[in-house]
Image 1 (tube, rainbow, N blue to C red):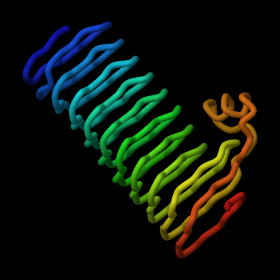
Image 2 (image 1 turned 60 degrees about the horizontal axis):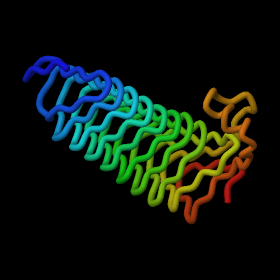
Image 3 (image 1 turned 90 degrees about the vertical axis):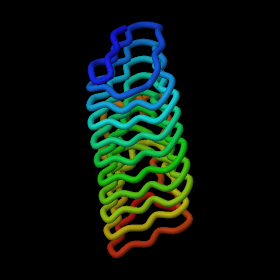
Length: 205
């Protein structure tokens, strides 16, 4: 493990460190950071854990990693079964695999390539979902495109300018192929309320 006040924090395997200000943070394995982290580049691979808030320009989380606090980022990608316990504020947020966000999301663009659960509101300029999602409150975006692949999606309310919901082509994406192979075939969107200027719906209840 290497640590400098404005250098690189690198953790391989099982280790621990305090938070702080860094140029780059790389966690491979089950390393744990206690405290808030601010860095230019953040990478978490494996089951690493940040017990605090994370602020980064560009970040990626793969595997079963956890950020226990809030996330602020310009660009951030969540893969595998990554979990962010707090809220997310980002310019670009991409979620592939099976992500979980414990509070709300505010972003310019949100792209879902797999499945995601968002416990509060999701607000964006553009929202594109190729797969499934569960938003426990409001999904609000100027431009919403939802392509359903084999699993049920749900939001309590959906509001926006342009809202397009369709059933995706059968070849799908890599993650969706796995879902289809499991026999979970229910490409439906459920919502209590849908409001928009232009609305096109397929397989929607």
